[in-house]
Length: 572
Image (tube, rainbow, N blue to C red; front, side, top):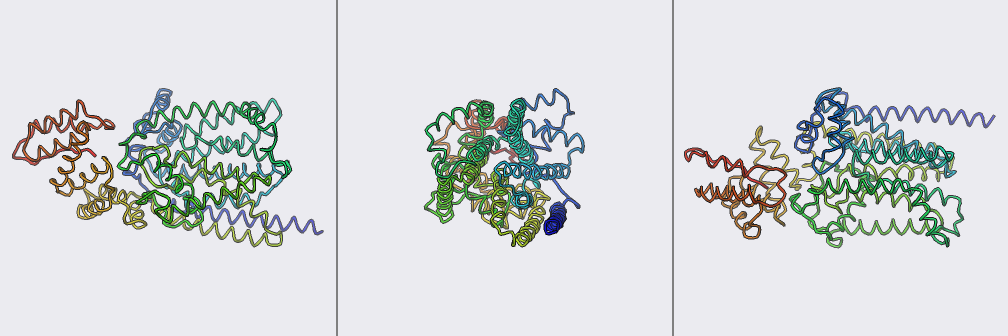
């Protein structure tokens, strides 16, 4: 009788949790019930969608083949472009449809994540279906992942996550499969991993998750007094394991090569206004490693852009010092558990680090930022296992209370996500939300200036003045950016003084030559202006990305009527 009553109670609790989950999910998606939604044109959506001919051609073998031969804005993600093309074919150039498609993928990801986590724990003989479910619910509705759904250009992350999770699940199937099925499951898992990287290169180190799961599974039955690194045949075991996972090794090697080639321009010294030395990039990793944990535990002031602190030296600011201390503390704690034969913490921590390294900025990739919400999408899946482990530690007499706490927390997070999602409706709402969170972020202010220049010039000028006040000054591209602000504010002499100083140190740089030509033109020295434009167009160095400003200015100066206003194009 008591067993029957227990089953009835569990069934009733499951129904309540399922109903609550449906409520939370519906509330999370509620912003999509009404419009408007638009592309964030000034933040990559123009080049990824509106002006992307690659996804607007009718789908055919030829157009798909072109996707697999194209590198765009320093990334190679043909499967993501294929998804964009499919959405465009079905709904046209509709940002609402793109976001809804991403929301659907995100919900599927949550389902596969739950199935994968629950299966792994069953294989470890520590089944925790309810804990995994609650952990997945918290992960799915957490506001740190809103950027994936709200920003159309972040869609590739959701697609890459889908393939990554399917690869993990398929690999777990291969572990339990018969020998004949194991081969095919392993091949499928490797293929899914390749698809994930062809969707977004941020998934390049996903096989670390495969290794982490295998290590935990292999050591789950070992005695704590005999951890695996004390075995005499440790090297032989790792060599044998590496050979058995040769498919992942070969696939990763090939994908790293492709990704490295695609990022050739993104790693250039002058690819962004900010440039970091190798030591500064290494120190930035410390900030990045703790950033998702901080934001996951306390998701306030989330926004589309996070600027770098004035100094990246760990000892120069409290955030860096605390981040470094936390990284060391977590690592020591995980190693201590591992020495006792409990490798789950260390495996999860290694996976977390591995999934952040590609987006940490250690290898420069175009725009340099402190972090981004989308960067936490892969690494924070470890939260599901962590919540499940904590839930299993709760005494059974208090489980119902723990479930209630998790459900309330999920609804609270969903509410924050709804508020966050509202900020992604329009370009101005995105930028204004970012400005309110950080009024000193020069890149946000610069985007607002560009956005409002034609419709609200007075506001645009104010934002431009603020951009100038907070902009970085160190480096060639930073000086070009400052000079651009002076030019747009009508302070030509200040701008030209900067260009003249840069010309002394960078006499062959295309941007400097072009802008020296503009200054010469504005000071009435037409022959000198023409010479600068010709030199910039024919022999100019630096990363121009196909910018034809020198050629355009050359044509304009040749046709210029002295009685008309000078209209020229500057480069920065």
